[in-house]
Image 1: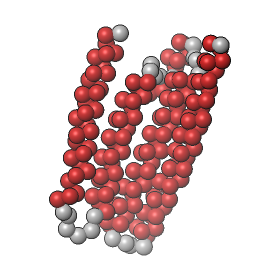
Image 2: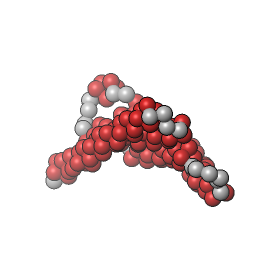
Image 3: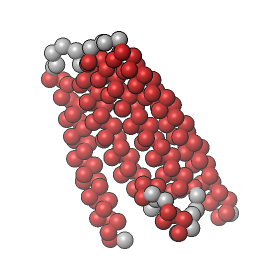
Image 4: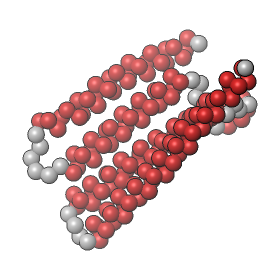
Length: 161
């Protein structure tokens, strides 16, 4: 019975492959943004259009990288049981000791994504800005403060082990 229960962890490979496939789609989309930026540049469009396309591409690439990290983290943290010497050869971002590390990584990656997304939105703005534009950075600030508390508690718990 225990052997069957442990074999169910291979189901998580579906999530890992899905994240990897999503990353490939996002890398394709990011490349389309960069090609569009080059086309705008060659057509002598406004610099703001080129910047908006490049920032949009970076935004999409960044989320693709996050998905790659999660794909590896799920596969090597929860599915494959590696020997300690093999695990030591993996980069540190691929060595998870539990679900809490994955959560910390997820929240940190989401924060970086939100910051880049805000910068992209800001660069695409046309005309005068309203005070409502500040809602996103204030939300990011609140999430970052909560993340800081969460990460400190996670680090304290890890030291106590």
